[in-house]
Length: 479
Ligand code: SF4
Image 1 (tube, protein in one colour):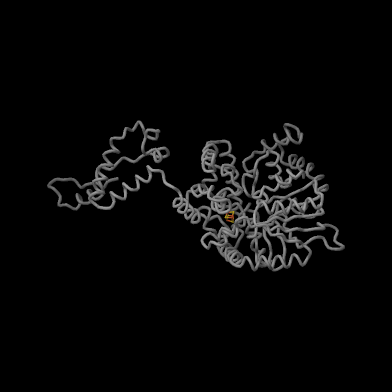
Image 2 (cartoon, protein in one colour):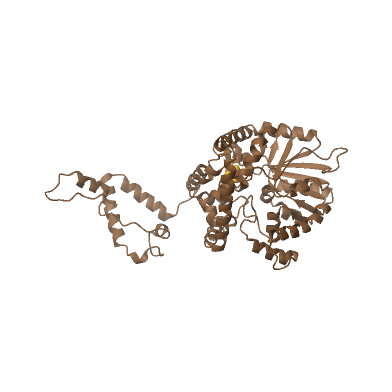
């Protein structure tokens, strides 16, 4: 089944799942309330967005210069930097580092880029036991499914689902559903794995050009452990994560926390500047930074699409999107779901994902929610135009367009065609409304077909402006 058809099936099934709908409604309402409060903590949220947008615009416009600056500075402190043109190259670089160190056990923190390149699967295939240490990621790993949302991977689950899963996989008591006890059980499992790990893998929220630093922001402290306990650490990140200056974090850390979860600032904020130095008690002996392109340079090369690289992966556009609210995250079958995923995936993974340009109501709620002001709905509209231009239309559609063009070429002809269409519409039996026999099915499947008006607008206008016949009533406009 191709990706478009698969998406249609999955979206239809997800939209009919009342339980998931209830969970999403509850979680998104909780999120909305927290974000409203969080935005109120800014003196001027709109001005903060404008500044963030300007900083990202500059960072992406001069990406080559900032990347080189970042690379030079972090290498000077002993880190190794690897450039990966695509997912296969990134996997190979990381596997090679792991093999060189005889790695058997890996701990990793949450990273959507690692999902993008299917890193965990590659490590496990190479015989390295790999543990997701973010609680949400750990839960979806136990369920053997991808993250549901880019910030909250287990957003589709209730506490009872997690309790059942932990009972089955970790042996917790069947009636144990308290969040504290469930977190304790997960922590117990992870603790030994942290201590025994040979390799730690993290992502990066930002790369700081002027100091050569990796900025990581998280709520559980697990990324910090992945970056400090194992002897070797890999930071896997997309090339677009650059910020020009360390001072920019004063805006971006609270902005990301507010848009992501409504928090004033995330609980743990770390800056990594290189491997352990002499006399330091902890930290990796080797630090490798893998900078992934995987289609990002193509996006960068197109001025109309470039602003998609401003994304800081806060997830706000997903929560605001009526399509995501209806079908959830798994139906997209992409690494990045929701509006940003719909815009980015066809660019990163090719035209097989062009159908995602239609997974939007074009209402603009995503752009309104975005803390860096990306006009995602405009991007999606452009994608639709491109997808439509590239698509070979079915013969019925081509015939329809020709007939319409022929009729519209002359006003009289158009009027006559309209009269005929209204007559045919009136003859259409109501009983076939929305059924397979209905020629208007694409429309009537989801909506009611309007009653055809008794006359055309032109005829109504003529009638309205002709001198009134004695005792005639005023004509009503056609509906
Ligand atoms: S597009 Fe904007 S709202 Fe969506 S994840 Fe990226 S930064 Fe957040």
